[in-house]
Length: 301
Image (cartoon, rainbow, N blue to C red; front, side, top):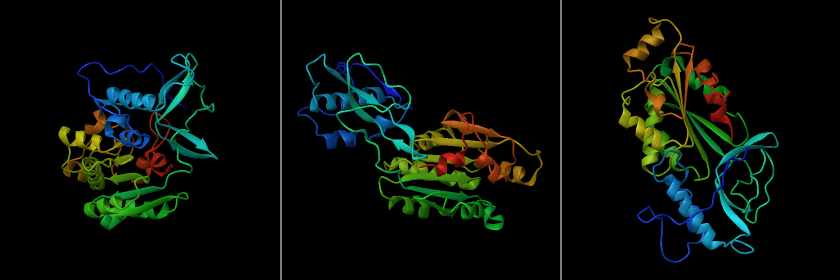
């Protein structure tokens, strides 16, 4: 479904943030601006003004056809569509539309003077599965990753221990900027995955999806959650709420400082799953309010 935000774009008010002044910006400069967190990060305090300024830049670069009343340049938010049965992510783009024209119906193709910034083929995905402290002995996440090592063409999965944060960072840093980066971490591995996301966000490369599966660790604080939020374009947190109080896995998780419901105010989606802490397979497959599980989102393209 195309989610278009249509409105006349007016000059910024005096004192509002401006991205650039002076000569017209090139399309390359405007495309780079669209990768700025202020453009794509929902909830950013400068997002509305920043999007308006980028839109104004496109309007200056490509003036309305047929005079002032002829057409309107609108901002179309990123959305997911299906092509040949496969999910495909379409990036934000700007589109010229006749003034007064109704927004397109769901799934309707939209003619445009400039093609949308959609990838020609589904993006490559790098999915890092990060196991917790007990994985060295039981291999819960490692065995799961091995069973899902080739989920679809173009999707690469790799297993890491929760102690391998630097290796995860280095493996992600060498990925192409167009590669979709996904982190799936369980228990202490969830804490490591969250720390990786926070670090990459500070470096200017937030991950596309972070899935923390009943995370455990020392990063359980509001300040840390804010940094994780800034480093994740989408964050799904799954909280294990099942099993008895004295189950071995639940007891170990409590002793290790379980995140619990702490991320709920920060994650895009918080899923309460009726399973114990050690049931990674069930937790990662449990579907949230939108009908999709963390695993389905992680392995989609």
